[in-house]
Image (tube, rainbow, N blue to C red; front, side, top):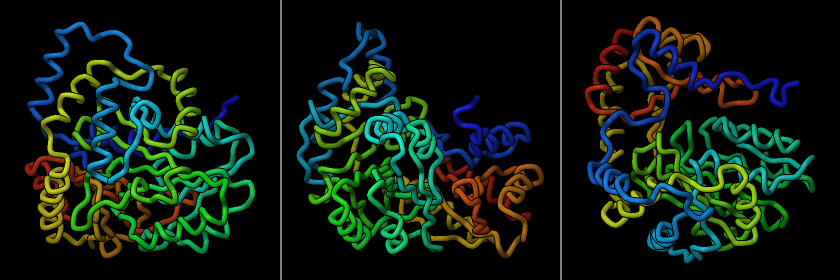
Length: 375
């Protein structure tokens, strides 16, 4: 008997497979198609020739943990203890899975704000806990009244995602104030903050749980080297949280993967000495602006993109189809693969919106828009 009878092939796999089948331009799955920084590749080549091929400490390469602590202090003015408050993970997904498995108990409830990334619900179900899916407002901001009403004595955790996938929305100061009020009312509530696009924000600087003194002691923050450094295939990220929570998460992590790829950790440790993390937002903002300027020529209506490398667009003036049928037709007839928003909702809500990934080279983006102009 299946533990996950309702889980099928993810929409990301479906659309990427269709892109391959129809030789379409793939703006669906969130991965860059441009070269990785040559310096990072050189560090990998250097360490591949050294004797660094065995297990590293379970929590991560100690010098890399120190670099993460320093980056956190520089970025958010938060001092963390490298040996107790940080865990290098096999991608953000493993970090999320280990956190939920460690901290959520059978029968407890976890709030998930839709549209939400598909890796949140499954570990909740595998804990024999209950995911409570709550729709964001129509402008993709949190509805704090609805969230507050959904919390009860059985609520263990709320999962938040900022910058947001799939919409590119970022939280404002008032959102954190509202969350702090809820946390004060519900002292047993934990927060899992997915911030994998934290260094990919544009006009407004990223606001992090790392900066919220009232919330730090009950929060675990998820970060991603894969997203920040355009190396999604490396599957390497990290968690930051207070020692009393990280101690429990590490127990799960050690029996899930034990430790993370040694060469990757050595290479990233070196790379962090030369890369300017603060320039990542500017790098992607140029791509966002380039892509948005091109899309302005089409019939799509562009929604705001404040962070991440995703652009949401409404096709309401183009078609009355549901979003899944519309995106499939885009692949089959126009050779462009995108992602519908309805699979990000538990109730399959139709918003007449689709998601584009603009983490691509300019030629790819330009060719895709030329095809979309035929709509």
